[in-house]
Image (tube, rainbow, N blue to C red; front, side, top):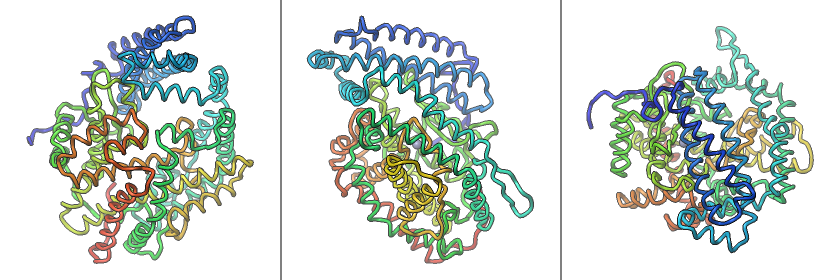
Length: 605
Ligand SMILES: [Zn+2]
């Protein structure tokens, strides 16, 4: 490893020179617009009926999809590096129009696929360039058949702008206008929902509890509006599903994630049977916080300790060193991302919060966005995003249509990479207090996956069942939520968050229904793979790459069977993954009981 000073800003010019004023990018968009126009002609009724014309249309679709992704990646990088870049926002608007036109044309293509007689459909799949795409083409056709006839779907899509997505926009508007008043002991602040949400993780317990009271009350004040929005969103969705002949509200989210109901049941079943060690963890954590039973706001509170800070170079060295033990290729790739300035890490104002990783399929490159201030959690985030980048890297050269993996497997490589690094941090912690704090952070992720997200899933499933019978008022929703939370947290908490259904944006997302269980799936799937990697040692690295390459073209049950030899519809695999998380929880409890925790200091975050 070199000690050379690394650049902390990324290089976008090697993709499209000139930032949001890039002439090359405008050319890319113009060419894309022309491609979409000719694609529309290819899929029109008169020309698109025979297998060879359709094969051509499919390959064109694939090409356009790659170019749109390239453009989308560039625009999101521009917006993230400077949230005030007005030119970047205009480029985003332009791209959205192109995307909408492309999507309309895709419904024409789907209609062609459905109407193609079986014999000709099979002929289509036999053509050499389409053959590798068989899984996704069959999936497209099946999904189109499952829906209403194309003209009805088109009408539903038109009506959904005002009758469905508008409710979600209204939710955002109300959230954007809300102010939560908070007295910090000296003066009263009016906080936005985002600001308040960040401060709910502050170390000072009395202030945190008082803010949480205000938070609940603020959502209670608006609860009739939020209840109305949630009821109408759900009503639209249920009516659409009924018109399509779908009787389960889980059909769509399971299909998007290419998984079966049996797998979902097996996963939650194992989680439900393994609440006890996590209930004990929460109790042990509460003791450190100086209380008998934890409240809702204690769950994500820091236990308070100072910790080591890393320079950017040290972070690189730490990550590359630990990646290397698992896979030299992964380590080399990560190092290249730092050297070639594929990472935007600088800590400066004007950047978007959070982190992401985005793929440029045409340039065969990736960019990572984070804000690095040197905390262990920053190092873990870097590792996480590098995991995503590696996933994209091992898929380079594959047909674009085979690289679209769903949300539940999207987090496989990232969680895996993050685990390598957070495990190493815990092992190498210089004192027990630091080790305890790092472990708390690690087990905290399991609490989020097995308890918080489980509560969201239980609530949403029960809410949709109840909504079939009529409207629910805010009181009904509070009751359903508190029941779900009590069950999911194994009764561990002294108080819950009844208005969580109002405060959590994920219940109001229209693009992806049930924005919850795929997180837990991804986390446990990755944990199970991590366990396998540790058992097998270095030979696993190649198998891991093969598994990642198949994530965009298989049902998850087939993926797990082929690469891990396990049956996801049975509890065994899930149990082995949960056992790993349980071991961390037990280790935390043991350390906490040894009294290694000496006083608390203000946590830096
Ligand atoms: Zn991620």
